[in-house]
Length: 185
Image (cartoon, rainbow, N blue to C red):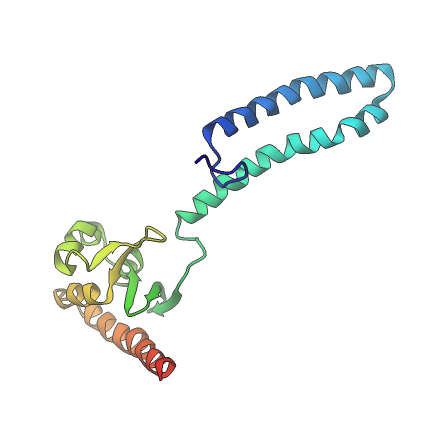
């Protein structure tokens, strides 16, 4: 089934026809208005073709909006479905999915000030386990599960990792568990 006409990503044929009509009206509409201008009937012509000019201007705006919306969906600036926490001045995005808590991997790496190979997702996946570091279904964001983050942090030897592990337990996990218990009872 083809996507609807005004979908965020319409079918390629809709896009081709949209741009074809856009260019066609640019040529024809400009010719008509310039002819009216020479004949001295510019005001009447402008009023009659104004709806077409508005549609002509809205097509690139609509396509630009769709492109911008797609860009926002795939960036860190996306409206986050989850919560923001702060560790040593670094924001850490957290998603609560029923009993599973997910931590944005990039934010964890930033909070621990990791550089180069230390930020490699494949190396982190070896330590965190296959299910410990994965992409979230909804947003495609690479994230640690609570268990995976714990396993990954246990194998790190730096003091920041220990401090971060305590912070995760005290500021994120324990309060969330308490809220769930109070909500369930």
